[in-house]
Image (cartoon, rainbow over all chains, first blue to last red; front, side):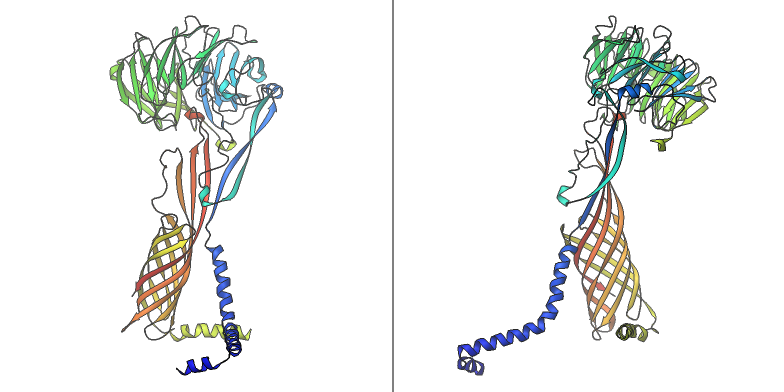
Length: 443
Length: 190
């Protein structure tokens, strides 16, 4: 009540002066305390922001004039292997593809001590086929013919530009020879997560995965042997290849200096491998196997196809059976890891004989009644006398084997960590003869 | 300089006072919420160690759901500032590692593979100890503080489209997360 009387008793001006004075005094007391609090709040705003950075790698292509690149393919001195790819054998020589880099040439006269004799520097190379002294190799989208009479003096004698169309990267007068690599780190907002820039900075894939498979007697005697994961095979005067995922192409090499495209046409979906069998071609795809007649090489015709679950699937065959490995856990899709044996006596009807469970099978090959299969970390030897009842004879560790070639009691296994060589005179006991490691640090 | 020496003496005086005290086992369990740019998240912590006078040193482990579920493992140090017989302010500082829990794998409809790796963990703050009669140093804790926890994530994926497995080019990106949040917890110390 007293306070009310006092307040009522003051004039308006006095009340204003009194309030101002109180505020000034109070403010003077509070200000020193409020300032740090205000500053703290402002600072906390920054301190409560999360910081997220992303680091990714950018690859910038380096191009070189094609004429310069071709001039440099001349049997350069030996180089270490950075990423083993396709394998090809002819005579006493082993030709090992270094993925997208070129071809290493080894003298294998002494299987216990193979040694590198030359290096063919072919950018973008993944496939090899040889007839006589002429080596055919892809260089990204081009097919090259090299005279390797003397591997140290190899030279390009012919080419078919643009055949492997899926590996076309632009200017046909230039060749992609290397990459400039640098890491980039930048700050992202949480809402930007996974909208990752730069993911399409480089991708070079092609129909050209692996090499070529040709049986020892597959033609004119002047060819060599390739692996089961080939996309290029040489029969007589023709190269059959998968120029892109859905096509089959034929190249006439009767004149190696002027390879000519004979045919190219749609042949199936997601084609991966190509295997010659008499006058037929077996095209392995992610969905199954397409069989083509090549009685007229200029006009391959489809005979039949058989379908399996989606998977990566190299295929080989002999006169009575076809052998397919299904490999899950890759971009090919599928969940099966198995070896399928098919009855191939009548190629227009190829029923499944039996499926054998495997760990992670990839390449395979056959020598007589022996079947060799890369599976997981080992290469397995089966007695395939009765394809409906394969008998495992032995196995040997081989890193991470991808493909295998058997000839003359020598087993060549190309693996992620190098090239293994085994003897199989006694199939129940593989004997390692040699091992050539890759040198990943080179890449 | 004189002020600094005086300040140091004041700070050390209580420690010297309790220098002759015996070691005591002490345990704390906390639960609460963290709040930062990524929103609110649940926290759980337990700290065990020994105290001598007002000082405490121990180890702690927790579960922290802020942005990513992770488990901080840390060394914990604290100091009590007695207000009266029952109550005290507790200044604490923790530092250690922050481990991912149940993170990683492949997101649905993606060919990416996510892998998380641990990072550093720091936190600090102040607690109000509401003590209990006859149990000196024990009581309910109301804590507020600030935490920094780091995680590292690698994203491995294949560039799409990719025709053949052997030719697919892997794409690898790394993410560094520096997560910062205020937290408020309630717990019990004995």
